[in-house]
Length: 320
Ligand SMILES: NC(=O)C1=CN([C@@H]2O[C@H](COP(=O)(O)OP(=O)(O)OC[C@H]3O[C@@H](n4cnc5c(N)ncnc54)[C@H](OP(=O)(O)O)[C@@H]3O)[C@@H](O)[C@H]2O)C=CC1
Ligand SMILES: O=C(CO)COP(=O)(O)O
View 1 (cartoon, rainbow, N blue to C red):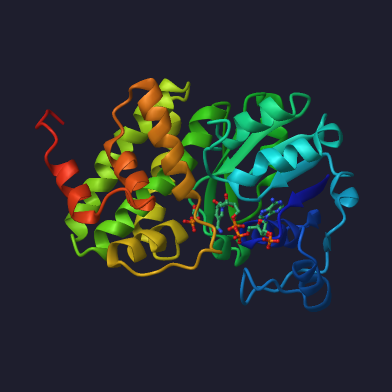
View 2 (spheres, rainbow, N blue to C red; view 1 turned 60 degrees about the vertical axis):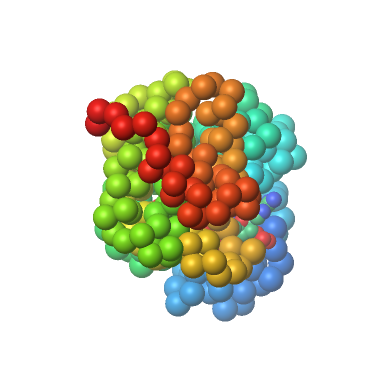
């Protein structure tokens, strides 16, 4: 099976490297000529430093080679996913489309797999998500991920096609739970970064992670996800990784907010837009999402850190 990857960023390239090193034929599409040029000429990608890209990864800015693949992993930022799908809707119909992005789309208020289902109903929608930094995957370090596909027969095919010696995929049919776990943990990672950056300490971070988890579950369950999925790799697993590692861009973005420092605007920080989406969903669906709401307000400059902390600490005392 030839595997297509849309997106020449850190994650798309890492997946391409891991799959190619395990004998898969990989076609990588990136919109940027510079990225493709670097891959073709030097077998490197500056978004994924110090990694050699095997010759069996074919890279192109042309969309046609990608569209010859029956299975396509989509590793572009979540807010750009609907545009990409709409542009290539007809050619993508009938294919297995595996979203590798983590976020809630602000225009549709859906996670990536649901967005695929809605925009390309003729495709099989799936999600590849869970605790995994691109650099770790590219280096072949042991990693466990969730492969979610509503059609379990297709899910089994994808699980086999995308697992490698170091990349172990667990399967579920709960695409909603998987897509929301991956999206919501980024918001909690920003919150954790803020807490550490502002000097609130590691106990405060542990409190945010622990109280953030039921918040993630509340929203996911309301939107049709399952509690077990949230407790798995795509939810709890990725929450722990992203809230505790400064390899995470969401966490680092939070750190800079907490320290009142500037942050490179070109860095992909999925949790910022997702926090806004969660705040809106919480309001319209009347779900208590205090941490996500505070993160949205901080990201948009609608509150300051002291007030945000007071907002969280002054909530009525309750049972755990
Ligand atoms: N990096 C990681 O460790 C992990 C990332 N992910 C997820 O993968 C997704 C991508 O992240 P990552 O690869 O790290 O991000 P990067 O910032 O490294 O790369 C983003 C890529 O998306 C491309 N892109 C941006 N907008 C569009 C568009 N409209 N159409 C087509 N391509 C576009 C960029 O192209 P250009 O260079 O031309 O702007 C770039 O190649 C995110 O949702 C992230 O959460 C998931 C797990 C791990
Ligand atoms: O999703 C990730 C790890 O699982 C990557 O996190 P960041 O996007 O915060 O870097």
